[in-house]
Amino acid sequence: MSFLRAKNAKKILVVADLHNTLIDSTSAFAKAFLKLNSKLSMPDIEKRLLLKESRHKLAKEYKISYSKLLEEYSKQERINKKLVRLLKIFKSIGMPIVVITSSKGKRANLDRKYLEKYIKPDTFISNAVGKKGKARFWNNLVSSYHADFCLYIGNDTEEDAISGKKMISLLNSEYVAKKFYRLCKGQSIKNAR
Image (tube, rainbow, N blue to C red; front, side):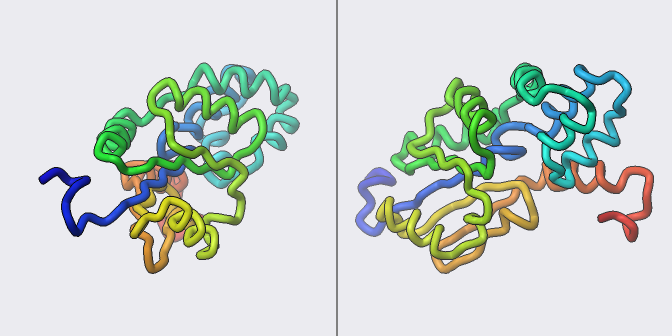
């Protein structure tokens, strides 16, 4: 009996965060900033990006056109091939795939096109600012797919540690460790933000 036809099989919805989970966006933005302003240092700009400073404001501060920044960013993007392979396996056994991002507008569309070169999610949700932490958002999403529970894959210990009755939240520990190392570089762990 196959997984999908098993008598007591549960329907699982798989949701993956886009930025720094499926696409290594912080590194791509850091490289784009450096390419467009050689006076910047990688550790400084990367730290500001990891602390979620607005890309728009940083571009303005460094006198870089946001459109040019996005153009260069798109050249630097890298996909998480391991995670995409896992999502393809889930999709092949009938699990719906949803990709979510807090980004909106040009950046969300740019990243969606890039992602779809590798995998086409069943649903792409952009402008999810503040929604990830809301139980009602997740309950509605799980219900809309008639799923028994949701497997959520993210990267951020603050915004992607989703909890709820029907939620299983997994964090990309490789990214979390890399972020911690980069933020703490040159300072004691006690002083790290």
